[in-house]
Image 1 (cartoon, rainbow, N blue to C red):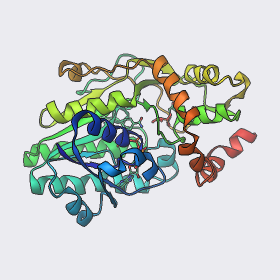
Image 2: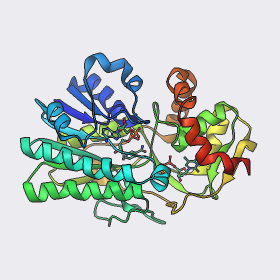
Image 3: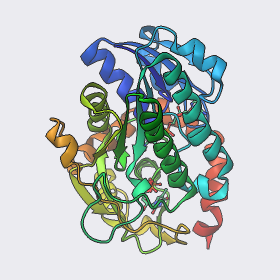
Length: 331
Ligand code: NAD
Ligand code: TYD
């Protein structure tokens, strides 16, 4: 296919591009603003096989240029970190909602297939059982609210204009090339450096972990087989409490368990996410990677790819880390 993939200099989008080039031979244009979370290095191995445009998705002129000749838009572009959305929500509204609107307009003008990459966080927290696609959207953070707003806008373009849109709601992803503000890469890099491991609150929050290649293939599956106006949950095979995840990282890295430090909890911290993926499984997708295996591969990847993360750890990330964790970890 000829695809416009937005936000593919980030974690999941870059994985999707790699999979599509290798497994489908697609022609791909990437549009990315290159925020702190987006880096050309992340696409280094495939940069010669794609067209790359450096621009934000809310720039309608750049989007029009990028989308020329494409059959479909797949949108990964977003501000994605819950903690940053709590300390500064504005950019989340601009990129996640206004930017999605700009892309939908471009799709509508050309009658293109449109796939929105979304998250289980739009449903909010669930103590027992699992969310289905019919569950209410009850987002808790500015991040998840902006993603829920985008989902509703996407659905409205199908309902109002008959655009063939689909939404993929993934659970927490992990794997290579994830920016180390997110829990798993943060804990791996801190454990390798023998730094403290800052666990929010009691550490009993549960996440449904999904290996990034499994999510990439789920999105490809929805692109091929997703019905118009349909949303699809894409959950990982394993749920795990944060403390258990950190404990396993400690074992895999040989770090000292006393590095685990309980710090002040995140405001409005969702207790548990859980998805039923039955709808997408009926279309033939299934997550392949168990958490135990994927986590070990991920630790190995970070161990072997310091070229990718060292420039991040020594740049503006250090200021972010100090602002966000410094005082709590010194207390
Ligand atoms: P990421 O933060 O690693 O990458 C985001 C990318 O979007 C970066 O390349 C960044 O430069 C780009 N970007 C940001 N603002 C932009 C703008 N205005 N215009 C163009 N590009 C812009 O994110 P990720 O973890 O790869 O997430 C990708 C998508 O998947 C997001 O929509 C996110 O909500 C969703 N998602 C993420 C997870 C997860 O666990 N990480 C789970 C489910 C869904
Ligand atoms: P995160 O990776 O930020 O993903 P999300 O908030 O989108 O689920 O966090 C995953 C879990 O880990 C979440 O319960 C918050 C917790 N967490 C910590 O305990 N310490 C940390 O330093 C971070 C970043 C997250």
